[in-house]
Image (cartoon, rainbow, N blue to C red; front, side, top):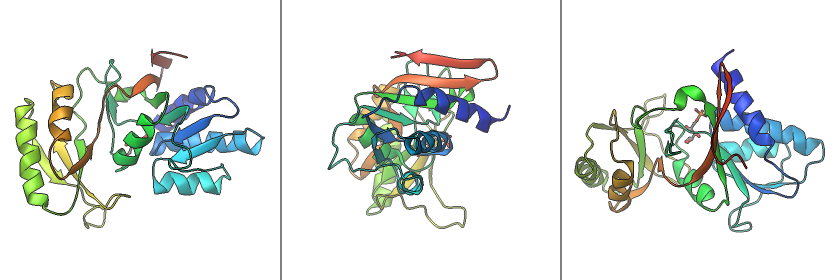
Length: 233
Ligand SMILES: O=C[C@H](O)[C@H](O)[C@H](O)COP(=O)(O)O
């Protein structure tokens, strides 16, 4: 079974949580893409839902499947958001933003009564930090912000290189919100809450990829089947 098959299995299990009439947040990335594809099939078969996307890419995918779309301004309270993650621990603390969608993903997750993570079980780690932590920053004053971020990271007891994310063609990556991303290569994050708080107050940091206290459940697919973390319903 391929990693993609596992992602699809997790997405299919999450689809069971969707009820008619729900207001849904649609995540971003290769795992969330499976969920949107499967949701599109259910919508084509008559399921009534209204959705908000966490990225321009997901918005385009959902529209191509004729999924009814709204915005957070029109639909500020969502019942359920289903999204992928780059890393998670057993306390349902996440690193997100490998696909540069962390800002809208966090806003949508925070507007949802429930956020459910779908992933292959290789993303479950004992300690967060192997995946570089994405930190979204405004382009203005980049070097000043970079230094302040490095200081915040050190104060939270972590260390590692900060790299400005580039696109495959070598140009600096610009997010859907018009910002840059600094990836913090930390290896391990011993104190995720402290790091999140330290990053939250750096001027120029728009958002970071530590999602703490947002996910209520994770559906992890592995060779041995599905594992559920958190509250199943
Ligand atoms: O910015 C992107 C998101 O946080 C994704 O949900 C995350 O990167 C996981 O993506 P994938 O399912 O492709 O591994």
